[in-house]
Image (cartoon, rainbow, N blue to C red):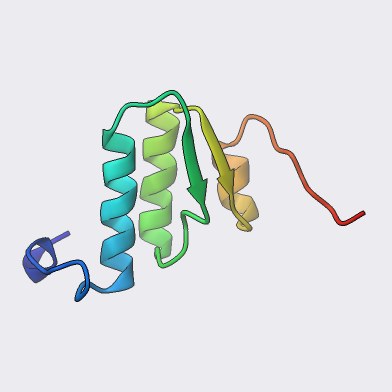
Length: 85
């Protein structure tokens, strides 16, 4: 991120900037399992592709919910699909 978004209080940052910071902070904190809910919300295609590259390079263990099939195909090694009974 560039410019004023680096210094803006979280309450005044656009949702896309907050999402980028949250994802970066999450991956910067080593843990055994990352749990993400809809990580692509607010991200444009360029940033989605960057996130895919980072996940594939770091190869973290993740539990995530996401509706974007391209993203799932790009990062998931196992998929569990829940359907109503």
